[in-house]
Image (cartoon, rainbow, N blue to C red):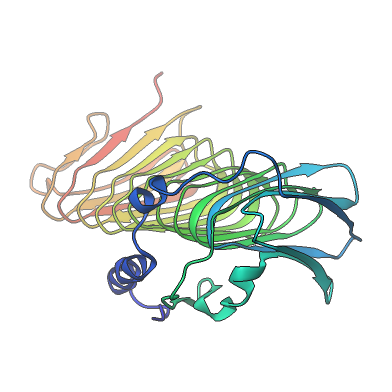
Length: 324
């Protein structure tokens, strides 16, 4: 199965089918036996600036944290019969269970171009990984299902899971996170930020740069952003933006059937606001709204420096201005 760069509705439908091929999401993972408590693999590999890290796993947990040393330390909990391959090829340090390496074509991820899933006859065993890496080292993690966390990175981060939660706390540019069935949290990142979610919530805090979020039904929460361009598209989830607007910033928040909430903070905003709910209502008591157009609002606040577009088909639009 291949997900091309289709319209959001078609791509999400394909994602559901992909999850079915993998045997389900969180409910399937919850029934798995835990990996052994004692690490079966414990080793380090030296790296140089310019090297990259690529982690591929079938199921389990991947935890990556930054440290000041120019080496990668790997701890893994897995069955003794499983072998963990840790090897450098062409400037990339690869970490992958041997059983999953043999099925390398079963799960191929190159967001945003495609997600490819093939059914495997005997799924590889669960492997839990803990890695400490230099903060400067770009990180890629690909896994059909399991939870991923990346903490303290100052480099590019790319994570794709079919079913699992993803948390990235600290990252450089670019950042790309995909989780078709799980929660996504991104905080303290900067640069080009791209998030794709399915059923789980997506939360973005304290980030700067250019942000794009796509989701199926999970609620999108944006807090304390300093992003110049912010674009959010949801099929059936709500969208909440809390915080100030960046001077000259562009904000495009749209959902088909969820509510869109804009809670501005800080001083008096300078923004041109365009809001429309095709079938719902607009709740903005401190803004002028013509009685003959209850589903549309156009207004300019202050100098109108930032541009804000809010759109929903059946949901409400709620706008709250700073007090004072």
